[in-house]
Image (tube, rainbow, N blue to C red):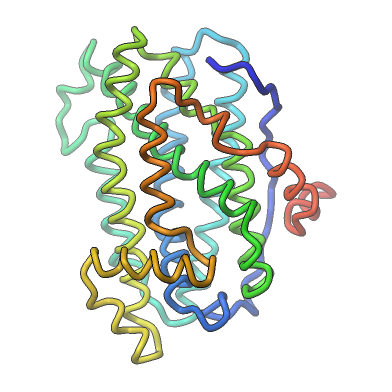
Length: 305
């Protein structure tokens, strides 16, 4: 486990009011708006799944500091889930149906990655039960690599404040700042539970080969499902684009506006994961994240409650 940074991870009980937030909360950029809004559909169920898996892993942790970090991680992820669930209601108020895509997400986390995936109770027998749990901890570590690097991207980003609705910008930047804050926890937990360093390295590469395409697919598909319901006829054409076309547009729009990370940014982040010397401590700036949290309107309001 990496001990370069010791920081107490705590949940901030934030609240957001989206009553005045427009559908296209990034001004004149419906593409970026829908791609980012798709995260509201993916995260609530996904982050509650993180919590369920980590609660099962807690008894296996032998390091007191790591256990405290994991407990802080769980509390933060639970608040993230609630905040993005409220954002789903914002989408519905703008006339967008979220249930069809949510059904796909619930299938992923509630069936394919369940304690007994697809009803296979065999994986609940010893020692397969522990192996399946550790495997899912590894999946979370791979996902958290992306949330961590996206968090640092958001900390460095200036276009959102210039072009975006203040409330929605604060939701994403508060959330992503906390992803930077706890970016090492998932990786450290997976390493802690693996029996050997070789097994840890091979497993994390195999899991990233699974997670990266799924992550890209669900982000793109979430954005496409929302764009297809947009009141603007031109924006609805995004729903008819194939995944490669959406990724090309992501690259182009990201380079032009800085409102979304480019596909090349995400791909290069994946390549860094491959290195045997990789550790997420090097993927972000904790102090920069804490500085944002100190000035975040929602986090400031939560601190006085």
